[in-house]
Image (cartoon, rainbow, N blue to C red):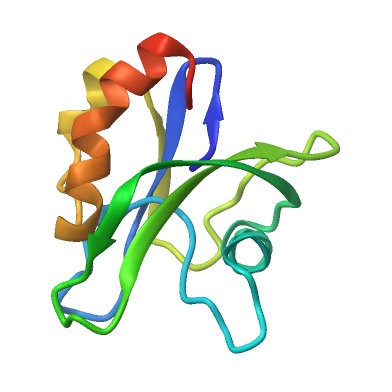
Length: 125
């Protein structure tokens, strides 16, 4: 996840229809031959037009509803002054801990969202 100045970046899905309007953290599927970190860096470039350095992994593996994959969350640092843009999402917002409940999260992201206030307060994210 991307955290700057105590705020985490959240993105609103535009597709597919069953998840449009729900919010998530940037990222996506790991392609064959990629590590989790390589996939996250690629997805941030594709989805947000930014270069990132992938940092520590946070939180537990979260099994996805279809059972074929798990969600893993990492912190990332934006490189070279890059600013994220919503290239593949309907919208994006920087959310402080007290704003996390202001958007409807995808079910897979909800366990991470629940832990974020503590992580942000501790400076772990």
